[in-house]
Image 1: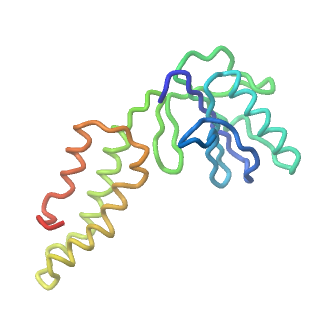
Image 2 (image 1 turned 180 degrees about the horizontal axis):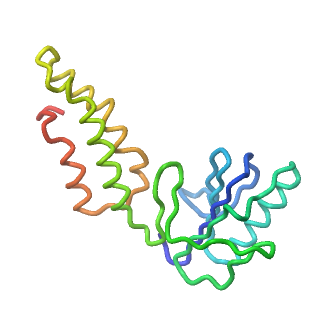
Length: 180
């Protein structure tokens, strides 16, 4: 994560309303929403407070209320105030968003290892199929590509790369066959 990036997760908001601001491919994106979770992103603590107040006001207009007790703040720099509406907001060094761990320092090695373990679990569950002599190698390869790779590679576009991680991912190909 870039220096000066601030994140807040708010639970209990169920609709999408505001377009806010971090440039990605020339588009302003500073909020991630799914069901009743909202993640706000800002470059400063003040900007985050402003965004949070906008979401709060818009939510109240449609009869929704932010649950401050479930709210968390993650920052890559020091935080001067953790108060929102007179209530203290918990500060965290990481949080889960849509099943992936987001960390303040941007390290994704824990997430990659977790995904590899999930893939290994799928491979174990398919063990009897892989041991079967009645199922051809190409069919087994197709099963791995259809059932294991998606589990391992889910949200991989958000991972920061490093050589060791690439080598760890390559271990998944072991035993699958050369033509995979």
